[in-house]
Length: 243
Ligand SMILES: [Fe+2]
Image 1: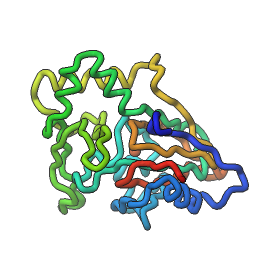
Image 2 (image 1 turned 30 degrees about the vertical axis):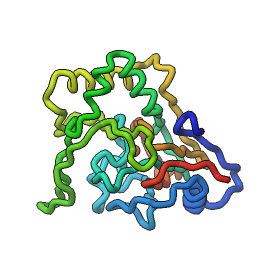
Image 3 (image 1 turned 90 degrees about the vertical axis):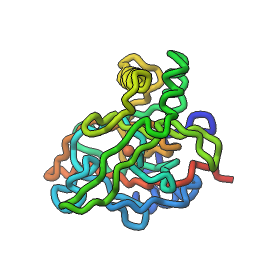
């Protein structure tokens, strides 16, 4: 785990209730300082389809696919998400596969292609995210920042990224735009040996140092009792191996 930045686990079926399991695992692996975003109660978010309410406007709370990203790419620097846990309580009737790629590998592939591409993404205005506005109220202002940075707390590589194209502003310089396109290619390479594809089943989960990830669309079957429910904990801490 110290080498890969991520791991997938499976609990035995008689393990504790999913929400408690998620909370305990997050704590056991050092994810202590949890991010309480708009949709989280006590640091844990229930990721499921919610047709109404405040969360309905956010893609995670729909059955739609989510493109490649790292978590909290819109957060302020003092709320950088360094690790997260995603624990499956129940899977969808169909679909919902996760794809994961260690962001350090994405960086190495980019650097191998051309070191200038990787370097351009360290620029403090490499990628800007538009404000978050809800019914005329600004919940978050425009956020400019680097894609790659060295975490000042740990010295490790951090990545801030979304493959979203709508209203994301990339620094208007040819090398930055070439780097963005190269990353898109790297992440969407169907033959990549570095992309881990896994459909999380009940009792399974992912713990990682906020690696790149995406989610396929899915279909719930409320009548058949097959609705996708994931517990997510996002943390300002990286994972730590239990003593
Ligand atoms: Fe995510």
